[in-house]
Image (tube, rainbow, N blue to C red):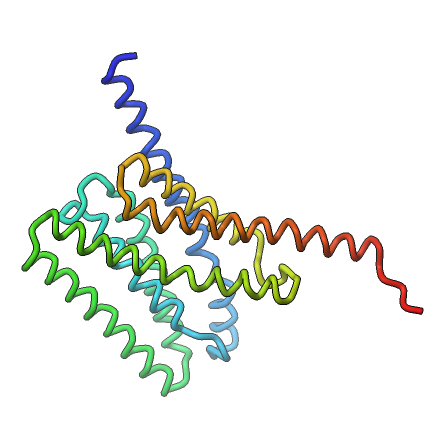
Length: 233
């Protein structure tokens, strides 16, 4: 096979991994919809927290900037997935603010303004003071730090599952989508020789694997208990 044909196959495989990552990420972006249907139905945010959506918005904006040609040419599928994610998070935040109590409404508005201010500062600094290689490193390290910070959520879920010995609070579909998205972008990062994509998504793949293993273990244990219930004397 000629080098041209090999490079063509390589490019197709790379794009396929990136498109797959976009699709699996889209599934994850849809996952909060039941929560927000409840908020809209009850016209109250109840005890739900808006902070996960604030953090997710900042993460998406930073990773979106990293995927732009001005920062890192050739990884546009990172920009597409994070632009979609940013739109979803912004919609969720607007709904949350609409139905939150006044003190929480003001707090969330403050957080939202802060997110855009931080993002604007990152864009300004990276364009005004850094050349192209330094810009890639600056935004790349920020994106990795942002993505790694987002792993606090699956770690908390894993801890909860082990503590309660139950997968009730770890839906299989979300665990599977998280694993597949992380794996797809890990492969995409490998094809692009980009450690800033590989490393965080490699960690996400490991955490996703742990979640699926825990689901298989505790789900089968629960079925076994139902099949052989304990008989108290």
